[in-house]
Image (tube, rainbow, N blue to C red):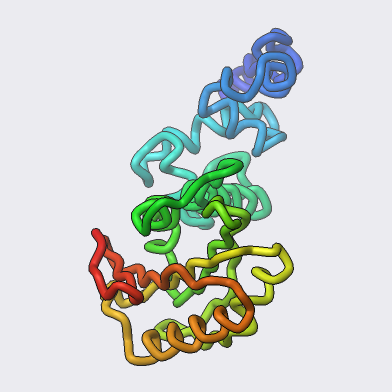
Length: 239
């Protein structure tokens, strides 16, 4: 009997004042005005019988299975999320997808218009958060104009757990399309050791020779490790 009474006392989303509903607040006031719970409620979209999306979102944020707050959407497994009333498997999958998107966004370098590269440290600051996250070897190329301003950062190759095979034509294809004057090649070592391999050094020589023929200068080839990087062209360790 008490459960039925409680169900009747539950407030539906339609009964919440218009100014306090997440969708309406987002539309009229902007996303920055919403609390973490309200933002998550929008992703959840619909609640369940007797519980609106705000209450379901609050349960996720307060779940004792995680560290609490927004950390829970990353830490809770799909199975743990589905144990929360109002979260089915589809919603749990959507929440985990959101978690992965936010993780990737946090690691994605923000390249402002006319960002000028003055030294290797500028590239490292831009790419280190992202490069350290990769579990496989990834090759990126920073395309620069004649004034060393960033035109674009392109993903060229994703390799195995320990190695990525890349050919000069793959490196310079996008550079030619974008009329780049120079490039900086970057790749990571999932092992965490930034020391260039013999293959890395040989690849750099081939890239430099190909760039000379194309009239596109290879300014550097930077290897990213765990907390340190190494410039192959200068053979200098950069932290």
